Length: 246
Image 1 (tube, helix red, strand yellow):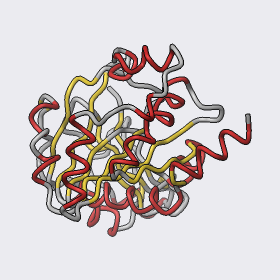
Image 2 (cartoon, rainbow, N blue to C red):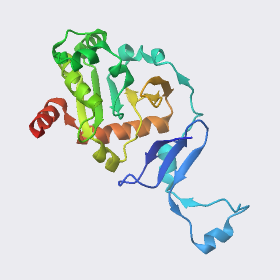
Image 3 (cartoon, rainbow, N blue to C red):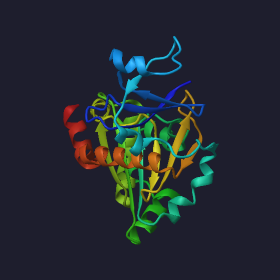
Image 4 (cartoon, one colour):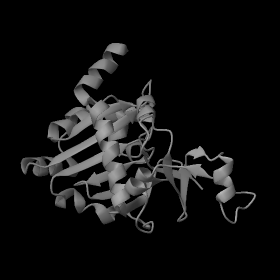
């Protein structure tokens, strides 16, 4: 079973930290091991396999889940949110590539040398323009590697048309994201109220999303958004830096 980062109160992003054990209802707690003999002597019903860690009360207050884990649903179940959100739809993209990109006609055109940044609006960009005209914000931060993967090169090129439609897309080096303690999973955050976390298979294919309004999960997503947004670079500046480095 894998672990999903929930949140931390450490500025260094290491510990104390909470994780969800995926595929279960268990929470894994990371913290400093208890070694004080007096404290250990006061613990009750201790099994030989057990260990104990110390964490600040603030960690549990801010991030401990307050509801049972939701089940995965098809991505189509949340498409209405991209029109119905009230002020902000924000995305964190963490993968090195997406099967949906590689399997798209646009990918093939890009590989053939077409200028995909200058293509007419599709349904996504048309909706972005429509929502932006109402004063709403579409935004995302993409984690990128050095050098960029092929998938990241595609998204950087394609992203210019999304920016022109009204999206604010920024890029953040993966190493810096790790230092900030950002999660390693993709999600959409709507109005700082609803989180839709992506579930992928090993081939980068979207299997579905897990939707939550749990205060702890929303708080963790908001914390990640604020940190990523502060340190990320806007698309135009990032693209110029990549070009100059080639």
